[in-house]
Length: 136
Image (cartoon, rainbow, N blue to C red; front, side, top):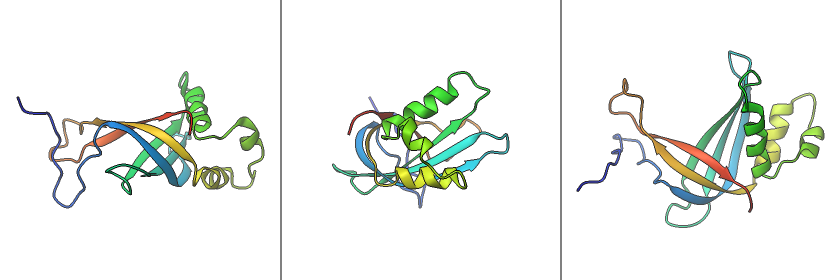
């Protein structure tokens, strides 16, 4: 029996194995999407274990028109230690950059689940789906 594994594409790192990792937020950027949604790109650095130093990227999108999207977005922010009081204290001039700065250095546990590339994309590097776990 062979394992179903997505091979690394030449020049790209192999996909992050599925599992739970202790991470630190290395960077967080916010932008408005073309549809007007808020998108947060978070780069995590694995802090411990055999994959220490590797980067895992996650995108969180807050779409007010999609049921549960706002609640999910803020639940993920709470998992990273940001409370409603933290959001209230952020700069109104550049709230996205203030949130990003507030996230850098935060520790978390994440669960990584590899996702296959879309069927139309052959020879593509697998992506990752990331779920934040509360408590660190």
